[in-house]
Amino acid sequence: MRLVVDCLVLGARPSGVERAVSGLLRGLAESDTPDIDMTAIVGAGADRAQLPDAGISIRHAPGPTRGRASRILYEQLLLPALARSHGADVVHGAAYVLPLTWRDASVVTIHDTITLTHPQWCKPSNVLHYREVMTASARSANIVATPSAEARAAVIEHLAVEPSRVWVAPLGVGEEFAPSGEDAVAALRERHNLTQPYLLCVGNIEPRKNLPAVIEAFEAVAGRLPHDLVLAGKAGWRCAPILEAMKTSPVAERIRWLDYVADADLPALYTGADLLVQWSLHEGFGLAPLEAMACGTRALVSDAGALPEVAGEAARIVPLADGPEGLGQALVAMACDESPAAELIARGRERAAQFTWARHAEAMLAIYREAAGGQT
Image 1 (cartoon, rainbow, N blue to C red):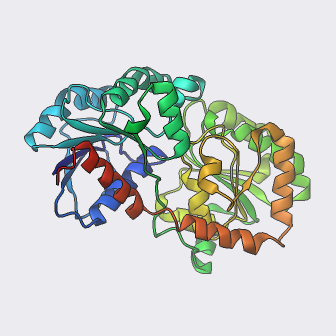
Image 2 (image 1 turned 30 degrees about the horizontal axis):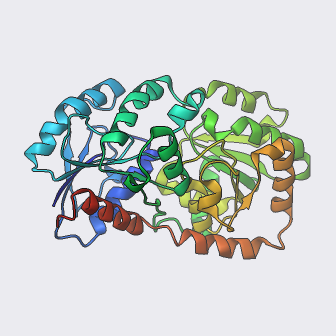
Image 3 (image 1 turned 180 degrees about the vertical axis):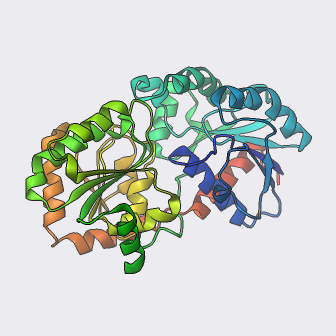
């Protein structure tokens, strides 16, 4: 079987969906699948560190594809011909969309449906693009893959896809996410001037991450904590109000925005934190809590989207309905009460170990074979 995976979404400074696509390629490259010839189509701007060195052919799309308009044009007009030239039996759109003129077997991964359900959280360009093309892709694909049962239910409800065509393939945590040594943590602290214990948020600075509420909760309890609040993530859509909230906070000197942190530095950043906080308004999966758990750091998450599903009983779940006041109380309880920490850390590492890119790839390979009608 010949497989072509559309990975044009990959670019510099990857986060979120890009990291999921990179993890998929890693898992596929390391899989023992001599019966499947695999080609990944990437743009010229893809970070080489995101791409495997062997096990899967990497084909660079000619010309610029990083901009949305050029990516859409390539995806819809040129990629089908490229897939046919490779003799593709299955095409996989790894990030929400397929080339709509492709008529043979296909799979599309839909990580969430928030462009339909909560467009106010999303870039207008994403909303315009996915509202039409994602919907058509979901209805034309042989199988829709989702990272969680929550995302599967959303696809069935909001995209009117038959349940039998929607399969779950949970994402993974790379082996590099493990407790870092003292020297690595100390070097990272020095590099970013992190002189105090800290609570950590990892993710793009954008509305869906609910950071104003996290900042408000931290402000209310900062006098009871020795910690700083550290935010690691690149500036995203509608980030100006969030950056302003950091700047004008009465405890602004204790709120640290590191901007984008490279993947290589994340294990030490997680390890050095006393607590990972992801109090998002929605997540189709949620890699950060699992990565933190794998590094031996406790996690606190909201009850939104797939976060409770992914975290299980290995994280503290604080409902959004509790508001910043409830979140603040939970921050104090977790940061200052060390008695249950060891048990939660152990549960977290055990939970994170259940999610690997090898297992994600195994689930996707089963999906590809099903989409191809059992062809091997």
